[in-house]
Image (cartoon, rainbow, N blue to C red):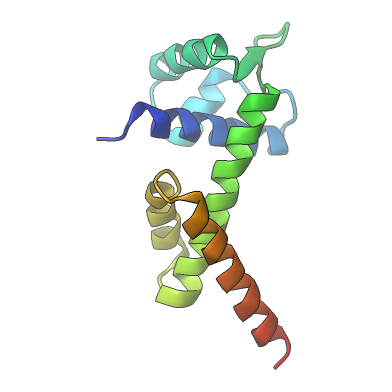
Length: 131
């Protein structure tokens, strides 16, 4: 079972991704569809995230990230992307498998280990480009 922190991070990450596609036009139903959850679950979570100050709703009821919500979402999304790339390059797993596994790891990896992974990928990408 996932922790409350993990699910909140997933909601914020989903809003970030959806907002990049349709700025200021993300509805709870869009988040529900993206995460394959029920709309009532998402509506309840949005209320909690709003109380915590991570999201606000505009006049049309669209969901927007606050600065704190955006900071958390960008952090999780960066981890997701880097870990996905690492799994694909180092473990030679298909993108879908790498994505699913990255979703699990992104919530528990330490900042220190994540920085190390980023540096590792950066060094190895530079080596590949210089060949």
